[in-house]
Picture 1 (tube, rainbow, N blue to C red):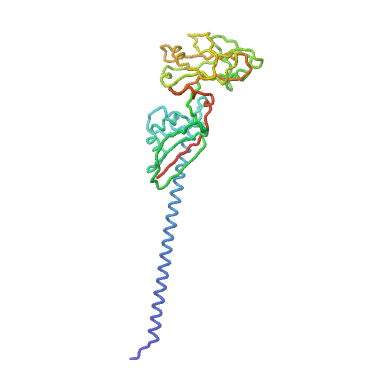
Picture 2: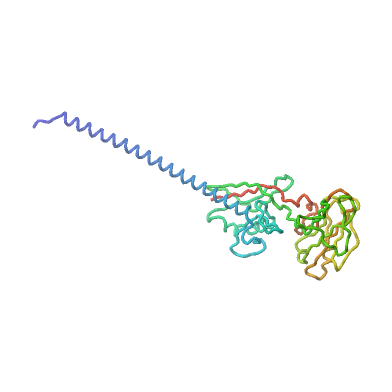
Length: 322
C-alpha cells in the first residue's frame, strides 16, 4: 500500500490550527466572562450605594420636613409612631419644615432604636447629630454610634433651624407698635386693673397688658422668667390675677427674673389660673419687648436670653450604614 505523506501533513496542520483557534476562543470567552462579572459587581455596588443614599435622603426628609404621626407623638407612648422633628406652629397648627423642635429631638434621642426602625429598613443602622452654626453652642448628639466595619455608609447634611433652648413664650408684649398690636390681628386686651394705654408715638406713658393661662403641673417641669430686651427708664411690670391684684410695679433688669414663687402664689390650690402680665412702657421712646418665658426646669438663668427666642441655624447630619 502506498501512503500519502502530504495528506497526513495537511491533516496535522489543520488539527493544530483548530486547537489554536479553540484556545483563542476559550481565552476570549474567559476574559469576557471576567469582564461581565466585574461589570455586574460594579452595577450591584452602584445600585446598592445609590439605594442607600436614597433611603438616607428620604429618611432625612421625613425627620426634618414633617412633624411625625401623630403630630404630638413626643407626648405619648403609642405604638406605630412615625417620628418627625419639625416644629408645629401653635397658632396656625401648621408644620414648619426644616425648623426642628427640641422636645421632639429629646424624645427621639431617649427612644431612638424603637422609633427609627419605623422609618429605616431592616439591616440598617444610623447615627444623628445637630451642629449649631454658632460656635458658642455645643452640638446636640441625638444618637451616637460607630459605623466601624460597615460595608456601605451614606451621609446627609441639611441646614435647619432648631428651637435650641426649648423656650416656651407664655406671653409676649410688643412695645414697638404705636397701634398697640402685639401680633397681626391682635389688639389691646381689656385689663382688669383698667390701666391707661400708652401712646408710643408721642411717648406718653401707659400700660400694655395681656393674659395667659398656667397650670400647676407646669411648675413641676419648667422654670418661669420675666425678661425684656431693654430696660427703659420708668418702665416696669406686674404679674397678678383678677382675684389677686397687685399694684407693686417691679423694674425690668438687664437679665431674666425668676417668677416661679409668684406664679405658685397666684395659683394657690388651683390646678389652673388665668394670670395677667402688665407692662408699663415708662414713656420712653426706646422700643423693647417683654416676655413671660418657660424653660426646662434647671436651665441656668444665663441661658435664658432673648437671642434664643428665635430658632438657631444648625447642620442636621444623618448617617446610615449596612
